[in-house]
Image (cartoon, rainbow, N blue to C red; front, side, top):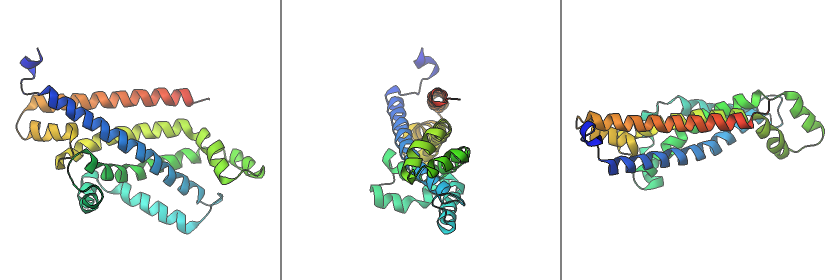
Length: 222
């Protein structure tokens, strides 16, 4: 049946490309969550009236976030080719896509973290400070628990964006479904290969969205 409607699809190659896309998305999402969370917390804590209030640090961090989240991803990949070559030793394959994926997505997520933290009732933070809680305790016991549903929703949106980024990274040979759709599908005029890769990307997106929505709903105590 599949051979009739999808004559050009090599399922072994399609499965390998799917695994590569899942690998790039999972690794990039993990490091994006870590670095984005750190940047977002730094932006929040160095903003006026917070425990680490510092206009210079806040401005520099905000400038870094704004610059890198504003660069179109396909341009960012090209700009980071020398850095990727030094760090990874190659500019091809799934690992070579990770620096651009993380640097492109972490600032985007950092802004979502900042928005989530700003939604926390300021009275809760002030009460913790008045009881002598350290900054580390406030982060662990107040900021993260209170904002966790929003943080999960934010990383879900970011992970879905990363799936799209991996497809774009395929244009320069990063591997995954994007590479397969572009090289084996588009360039060789095999529409069934492009269509199949697109459907698999959509399935991955739907799964990520479901997991994110389910997790956020379980964490929301309101």
